[in-house]
Image 1: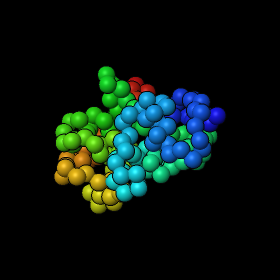
Image 2 (image 1 turned 120 degrees about the vertical axis):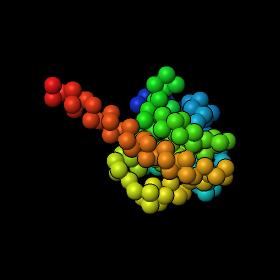
Image 3 (image 1 turned 90 degrees about the vertical axis):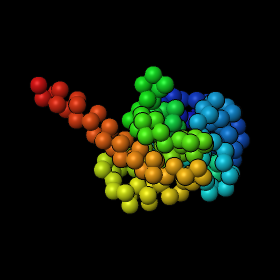
Image 4 (image 1 turned 60 degrees about the vertical axis):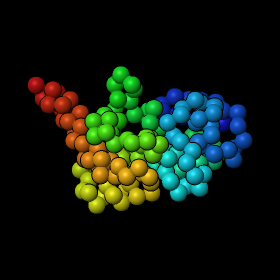
Length: 164
């Protein structure tokens, strides 16, 4: 039995420790945002965050994440209240087919947690491991900039209210 912390919830999973995290997320935990794209860590459709670092969940064995914090797109917000990255990707209409978008959002989330105001070059570098075959890279770039602004507003708002 493996204990996982996924999106802030503890889960006990009865799976071979060599099982790819992607399969556990999708099959056992029914978290279907991360997608199986290539199975080789070359497309990024399966990207999730492990302790705030983007990883290809198709290559990451279950044993490697026990005791660590795993976050998927489902952990960024809800349908009723999407998180800043999710809202930005929606507002910029970043998805065409949408297959790559969960991985793109997780990579963007990781970048923005480390760099609140990245340049175009920094965004491109951070997003490079993930592929978008539909050609929406410019919308994705705009979405990351928008998410940075949204996250800044969400941080500043409580600080201003506390000053009152």
